[in-house]
Length: 213
Ligand SMILES: N[C@@H](CCC(=O)N[C@@H](CS)C(=O)NCC(=O)O)C(=O)O
Image 1 (spheres, rainbow, N blue to C red):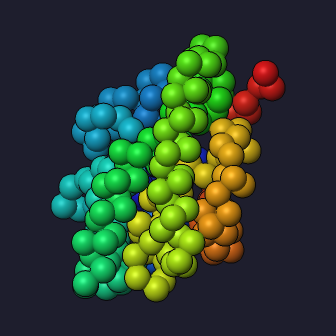
Image 2 (image 1 turned 45 degrees about the vertical axis):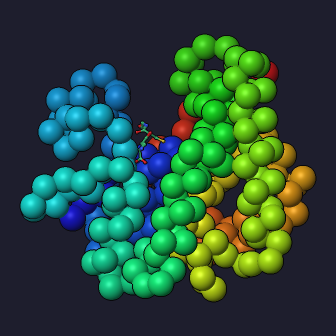
């Protein structure tokens, strides 16, 4: 199986999962939105987005689905399958609608738009994103103050998914430090090699830099 990836947040997440699980996949850098590339990738993912996991029986897109597939193939509980599964699904579902979305909104303005020349920072969007971040981080803080990880007693895909955008906080500048338990939880993730440096040894050009504003 081949995992098509870039250094952007969702493909980074999928690569980190594959490396955590020591999945038997080949990694290939891809750039489906680059000029002339769409025809190659559209049969694999009609959205043209990454990550894509392609194998002999077809292709799978969406980082969550890929994480589920790789975890099953590895017979791992990283994607919870026991009594902690509802808890994990709760955090995936809530995270995508709340914490992750807030991080995405701010990162898109300060990071993605500036990297790819997609226009000036929209301060109204930043305000909305930071407001949503504050509400969501407050809820996470209350949870993480009395638990180490989100689902059960060990790291799971819920933690990885919740943190999708945090490796990019040098550009997003979300006030993570205002939430000490969330910051502590994220330091635990950063201590995991596969999370800290998922691209180690892989052939992938760096992201375009964010120009200082
Ligand atoms: N919902 C999708 C989102 C995928 C997505 O938005 N991917 C972006 C990166 S974060 C992408 O393909 N960007 C083009 C690129 O990285 O070349 C998922 O979870 O996999």
